[in-house]
Each structure stands twice: as structure tokens, then as C-alpha cells.
Length: 379
Image (cartoon, rainbow, N blue to C red; front, side, top):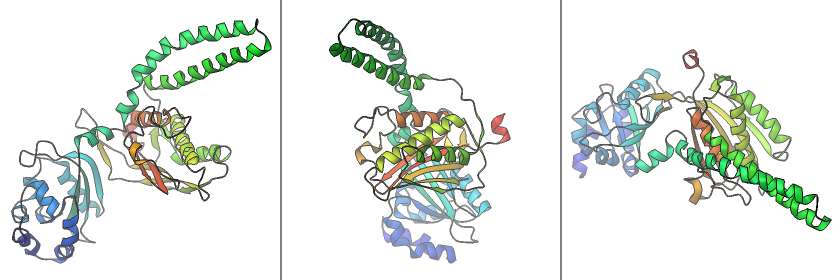
């Protein structure tokens, strides 16, 4: 695509916001993500190279039509731009299909929209395209990964626990008739049988499909409880810091299950900091009103405005397991079972939320997005 094709839209109808956008054209064209500038009439006033490729049209062609000409009828992208103008602040929405016959039947993107500058009616929009595999992996908190052991758990409960009880009983009977040297072996059999039963019990949680008993929960009370437990035990020698938004509304959740989630995440963080001399864990809460998520199988989009993060400055998560870390039996621990994060993903998924991990060295963060409590939610 020639510079001649791009220049008309950067030069037409100049104003402050457009000139500011145009002056950064070289940087914007280097970005791999489509970026467009939309004016108050809904027309595309500027587009970087990636945007022209995404919409399969030159900047000159894009400038001759409103944005709605290039996206599906009633697209959430148009609604988001209206929200940015009304609020005067940025709005994000994840997993939006803006595919058309022109640009492709299915184009799943994350949308980031913000005012071009203070007081302006122009909106800058960036699209981050996702592959189908990525879309499936991240839909509603790896719920499929957690459920992949549901059938296995039910089978293990029946096929393993019953024979184990017989093995354990036989070992106890033998213990009464053997000498002291052999008694240690019978106790080993008993202990190992008990350990396997506990593992199966943990897996049975995945097959529990009963509705969750929910109530309005103060997340800060949950985090304080988890912090006290951690600092009285496994995180005794680690600093635990707080970055709370005190104005957060209650979360619509099961308190005990949230404690289980955050206790698991804080414990993982503490174990990752064993060899870090200045190790610290940061618990943070924030309000993200622009975050919405599609519900698979429906056109419903749920709002997930509450963001809770557990962050540590440990060595990070190995890159090769980051894409699978919420799958059952995936672990970096020598004696780990790989069920902890899978259970966390299931609990958050059952709450209609999202959990993601950014596993960079010195900054590993598990971010959870959940719905807030409202009177409508409780009905």
C-alpha cells in the first residue's frame, strides 16, 4: 500500500486531535494491532497500516465511509465508542466478533477505546485480534480445562476408593499378627492408601455441579482473612502488601470458595518466593467498569467490573507451561498434584468470572475479574 493511499486521510479536515494522531504515524504504523481514529460523526479519520490491512481497505477508502460500514450491524464496537464519548474515559471489551464478508466471516478481537484527548469528541480505538485457539482457551476461565477431569474423578471415586478400603483393612489385620519389623510395612500400606484416597477426594470436587450458594461478599474481609492465615503459617517470613480500593461494592459470590481461591494463589506465590530474599506478595483490588465478557452459546454479555490481583516478585512462570497452567496435573512443584490452579479456575468459572496469569520474572500476577452484587443479580 503506497504512501499516497494513506496521506489523504491524515491530511483531510485537520484539527488538534487529528494532527496529534498524525504526528505519531510512524510509531502507529509500527504497531501490529489495528488503530483507528473515529470522529464524532462516526467516520474513520485516520488508520495505521495494521488497520488498513485488517479492514482490507486503504486509509483513503476508510475515510470516505462511516465505521459502521465496515463492521456488523449493531456491533458492540459502535456502542463502546458512544460510551467513551459519554463517560470521557476509556472502555475495554473482550472477545468481540466484528467479522463481515468483506474482512472475513469470524474476526474475534479485544477492543480498547479511549478519548483522543481531553475534551475532544474523537475516539482512538485499538483492536487486538485473537486466534480461534486463543479464544477457546480463554473463554470463561479455562472452564473446559477444569471440567476435563470430571469424568475421571467420578470413575476414580468408584473404581479406586472401594478397593483401597479393602487394601487398607487387610493391612490393618496383618498388622495385628506380624512382628515389629514387618509392622512398619503394613503401616506404610495404610498411609499410602490414605494418601491416594485424599487425592481422589480432591478430584471429586470437579464433578460437583450443584448451584453455588451466593451472597454479597466484602472482598477486603476475605483478603484480610487470607492474609492472617498466610502470615501465621506458610508466608510467615514474607511481606504481604495491600493496594485496596475501599469504595468497591460487594462481590456476588460464595465466601468460603473465595477464601479457598485466594488462599491457594497466595500459597503458590509464597512457595515461588522461597529463594527470593526480598520477596513480597501484593494483594490489590480495583474497579474496572469497562470490562465485559461474552457467554458461550448465547448473545449475552456480562459485566465483570471487580478486579482482584495476587502479585509476587518471584522468578515467574516458565513460558512453556503458561498456556496450560490452569489445566489439571500441570505443575512446576516436585511433589505437586497440579490440581490447585485447575480448582481455582473451576471456582472462578462457576462464578461467571475470569482468571488470567501474567507470569513475568519479578512480576507474576494472577488477575481475577468477577461480577459485582446488585439487586438485579440477587433476583
